[in-house]
Length: 333
Ligand code: ASP
Image (cartoon, rainbow, N blue to C red; front, side):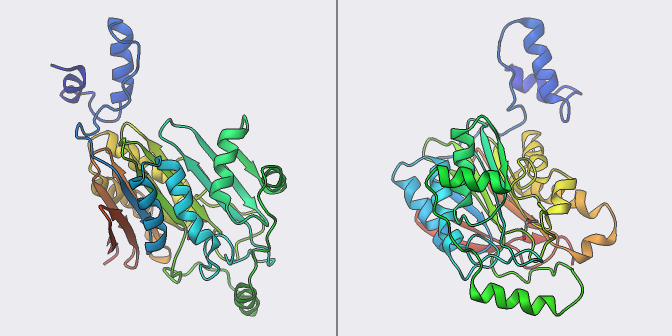
């Protein structure tokens, strides 16, 4: 019996599996690597596959075509989301994103690759392609996260252009918002939202990206889940990946994307894992009625899942040249 199968059948199966795997490896001395893929599916998909939050057909097609050309998962995902980052009509990502309540557009993004490396930028002004910038943090610095002015100066150093992110339309909407007194996120008012994208390349490697302008009219300095590795995005190339969208504060409280991946590691399908992660949020009381959270996930078998608290969330998938947008299941009936 393979060690992985043996462990699946022990009472330790579940939460403590990775610890059990580590102990077994240490005790027997038979392996010098900790098996972190315990419980994940043995099936391996043939890439390429792209999935993304919301309805972003152009973005997934760009990424899907790059993957079909043999490009790796991370570069394809970054190019895919770059389309929406530059799309001024999209008021939740990149240029044209809604500003904070002081009228400044600040962007957040993170990336994670199949080696388990990651990078993030937080509250960046004047830079459109923050997913690409997050990759530069990962590759060109000894750090994982850069924020604010530091991230912006690093961007110029890396050759990113300075751009005005506040469009006339976003400015008008903000001025209109200022005439109302209350700050309250509205469920699904967004046409597009945070773009989280997961790519599996033709080697079967998974990487992901999450990019956003964050909650519209947020307090200055507010950071949501999107640039936080484990909350907005998490990848474990032995298991799969997950990304989140919706009210970031609620995703952070349950470390949502990491949770989805860990649930898959312990045997759940991507769909079951997304559903369980949403249940963890709604189990905290009735507040979920006031906000939206959605997850999408993929595992190494190429199975995908998506689930949200409320109706209105969808995900876009590109595989074998086919581009589909599918409404996710949802909790609140
Ligand atoms: N998750 C993002 C945030 O909280 C916003 C969103 O997805 O709408 O910043």
